[in-house]
Image (tube, rainbow, N blue to C red; front, side):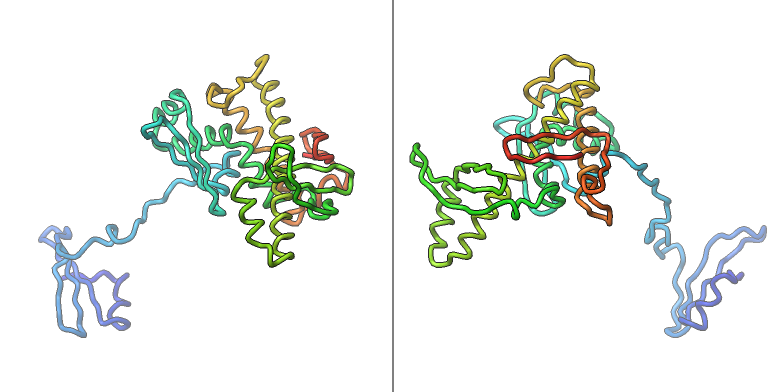
Length: 295
């Protein structure tokens, strides 16, 4: 019997010893686990291997990728139902968005290797849900303080009979935001609490203005994509983007998100438009909202 000296510390601490059995040539043929406290010995061949309990394999680390900005925002699901192929993204804050995808996008996603599928899913999602992604991102890292821009709000009846939120901004812009039936019902239910009403209207106005910012950024990304992809015109539907155009658009969007993150002042950075610096992105003039985005 030969004791492995690397394991002898188990004896004084836990009352456990491990012994190995060798044949006449000195080769180890088996081992036993001895519990001195309980006076029990276990046949090593019947004890689960340590490698089966603990995964000692060194997992390869993922190389940094522009797609990493999406991994921190949402996860992707692709499926097929009675209507057709669809993609669903689950945003980390709990929001969920779903849209139909084309047969080509579905085939692209399912036709790659397993270790490439996540990246393809993120690429398709970035083209399909770019406005939603930008809106979610700008809600986290706003580049403008829209709340300070809003002077007053009022709910008015539109000529079509629907109710709208009219917000007066400090720059003179006065957007008219049509309320959904759910929003109108929610507003009416708060009739006894004026502060709650104002808070509710403020959330609608800020979301609207953030979406306008997102639309402006998206339009600029499409212009950059058209230029870098070397095409005369982009397909009107993202479902019709080729894989090559999708990849260019996705990287442009990822760069924009990273730039917006820095410009928002997160991670200790100063807002770039405050210090007078510019990123590789040009200024985006959003005339509808009366704002100017520096990316």
